[in-house]
Length: 319
Image (tube, rainbow, N blue to C red; front, top):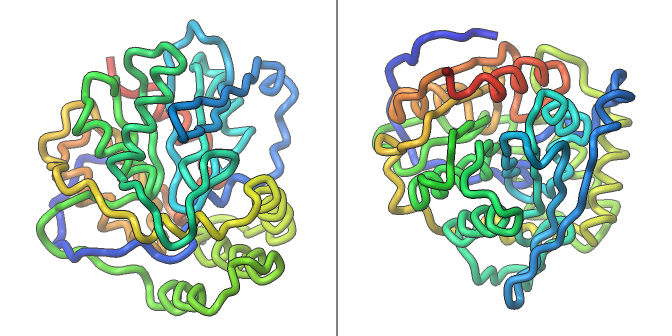
């Protein structure tokens, strides 16, 4: 892990979200030290707002400083690993994760016809805070969740005590950034040939996706990954509606250089979806207080890096 001053931003190229970028490889890791952590209180809450339903889950003591976790494209809240949430709560944080629209137990929309935008998803994050009676939270977003967090911080900065952006890309930044790796792009293109109503095909493809976005500094546990994907698929009732995430618009009004909340940027050096230059450019443009490069980290939340990530979130912003 490298912790250093923010470097100069490279050029920028518009980069579309890659297909099936589930973005949380650590969700299926087998934690070896859970006994004390899982003794912390966990509570489920479903938020209803008209036809919208948002499934949420909270960890730890409500009197602790709140941390809101926003996950990426096609990924339910389970991709913020249970053990990760318990460990963060054990560090004195009230941790809240939730299912974005079209994932998990939250509202599903007709596939191919999403009637919402990334801006609506940022407002969903505020809805979650409102439902828990929280005026402002420390917000952490990963991949698409990092984009949603940027919009939230831009639209409602008073609700964001601090901002942590993980494995994401800056919105509306002029310049040129490298695209996803050729290997990942070839894999991603195969998503167009998948029958997203076929459980076996989908799980095979997503398992391969998780392997493709994994980092280089740790072994990939294919068996555990597949078991987790099967669990998440069945809980979500499939991933077909979640493909709506790749048609989302929004976030056009965000100016990352004007983001007000204190910013922490974390990015893996081996991320094949958003190469490390994306994190560096974001950190420089938004004047991040701290920028952490995870050596060999992929587009994931692997358990090997939880200690560094949790420690950074807990210590952010600096006193």
